[in-house]
Image (cartoon, rainbow, N blue to C red; front, side, top):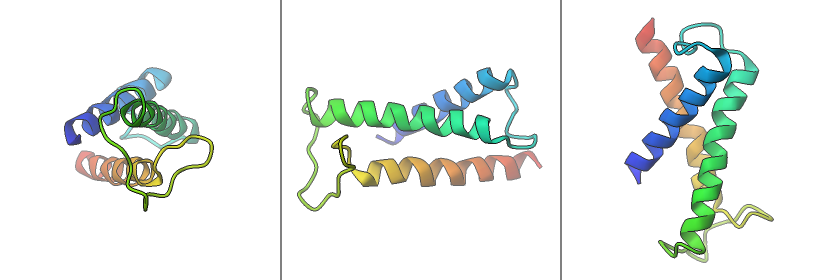
Length: 98
C-alpha cells in the first residue's frame, strides 16, 4: 500500500509539473492552482481506487467504525491520509531543495 501511495504522489507531482511546465515547481513560489492540481489528482485516484478495492475488486472492506465520506462511500481516513502525508512530504522536499 505504501508503494501505491508513493506512486500516486509521484504521479500527482508529475501532473502538477505538466500543468506548470516546470518539473521543479516545488522550489518556486507555490501557486494555489498548482497545489490544487496536485491534491485533486491524488484525491481522485485515491477515491477511485478505494471505491474499486472495497467494491468490485473486493480487496478489503472497511470496519464498521470507519467513518465514510457521504455519497462516495470512501473512508475518511484514506482521504485524510492523502492530504496529511503529501503535505508533509511537499514541505520536506521543499526544505531539502533549500
